[in-house]
Length: 312
Image 1: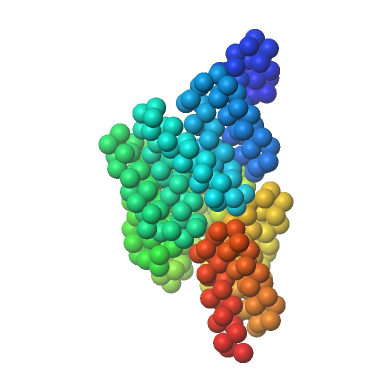
Image 2: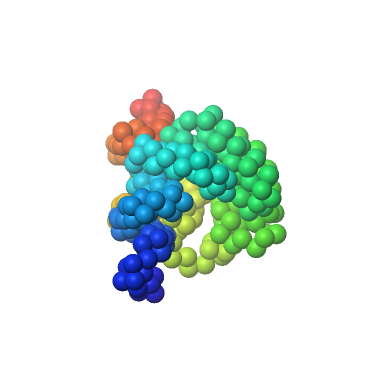
């Protein structure tokens, strides 16, 4: 349907409509995990919108390109695109999209390990969304701060923020938001050792997600499931979940999920007493993550590898 609409707009010379529709096709492909195809459509949308001086559509295309590049693991290029979109949205006075860009830049900075600047971005996005009365937007910003809290070793703060976001998502009936909030709660509770509560939240997230066709959601669910199973020493089931993510993320090019799945597989090898292969896996994860700019993953893998070496 979208491609048919694009063909009609192209035939009648509606280039503004074609730029928007091309971007819409990119979004559909991106949600399906078809990153290269999505990137092609987003870049075409940017090209057309630039040619017809449609700055709003151009800025949206820049943001979307940034999102795909982040999934592919091109963090520096992702930041570049997001910042270009941020500057253009600022010039246009598009506060909704400007807040989104701040949030998205915060996500990339968090993945790079720049937690302080990421926090500032999230807080700025939160303030703008509160001013605009965007309940779901403020909940998303608080949930990002919850993830950051857990990344910073503060799972109690993470749980508190995630519960706040969950209440808002439930109030506005935002099912994807509820899935994300329950996932963050599962992680923060797991990190506090509250495994039964973590499992209950993970099960709720799985139920709400249903048979989601979106690879990123499935990867998040399976990675948390594997992490919880590792904590419970249910290693066969944990390995199955982690390998599923590894296979899918290798096929679709989602680098962060591939790195996180590989890290979990290294942990599983270590718990089974296979110290040498575990160390080799973790060293490779640390090296690849560092090269790609995923410093928190690199640090976790390196620390686990060093602990195995010290135990020999």
